[in-house]
Image 1 (cartoon, rainbow, N blue to C red):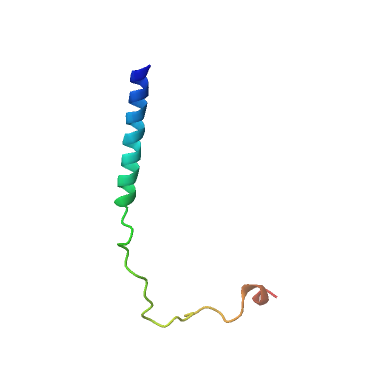
Image 2: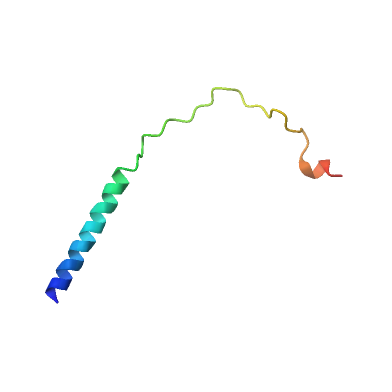
Amino acid sequence: MEIFGIVMLLLILIVLAATVSALLRDGRGHTPPVTSDQAWSALDLPSTNYTLRIF
């Protein structure tokens, strides 16, 4: 029974170590910042909403 407990403890430690490793390697902080270089425009969208255009 003690061996089963030791195996379960080792398995839990391995899972926790893998989880921490995956969280540290997921690329947090390495994404480029979002910048808006061009002015926003609606291009060819209509100026009235859809509910008013169907009547």
